[in-house]
Length: 178
Ligand code: IMP
Image (cartoon, helix red, strand yellow):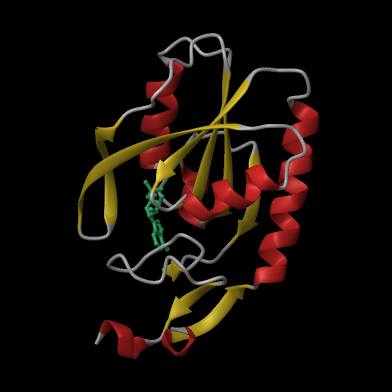
């Protein structure tokens, strides 16, 4: 699988260390508060697993699955819920856990949707952010890495449902797309 990569952008060690730092910050920011971590399937799978396991306190996790209507590889911001949260979030502090924020359209929709359910707060933790995301008015409280505007796979991120189980994040070699 590694042979399909052109370049490794984030190593296992870099990801592990940064996730540990974010977990520590989140735990101290939310000390004593009722928090639920909301992940977006499927990309956030690995981030959620490692982020919550890096915490010392128990962490409650819930999941949503959404499909974004778009043209080609760009999302449009028009989103349909495929799987909603299992639990009510009213009065609770929500931390959305994301793999990557690209255009930010999907996340903007999600923040607005969850905010309308009466939570105590809604914040975002994303492992990666691409430059395009800076153009939308979206507050990202916890950011792992800023990465270049390239298509990346691994650590939960896929290309045609492949490569999610790579331990690193990298770009694909041209022969994969051929
Ligand atoms: P956005 O709405 O443009 O921010 O898109 C967000 C979603 O698109 C992410 O949660 C990913 O699932 C997917 N995505 C964005 N960039 C990449 C990438 O480089 N590789 C794989 N998936 C990506």
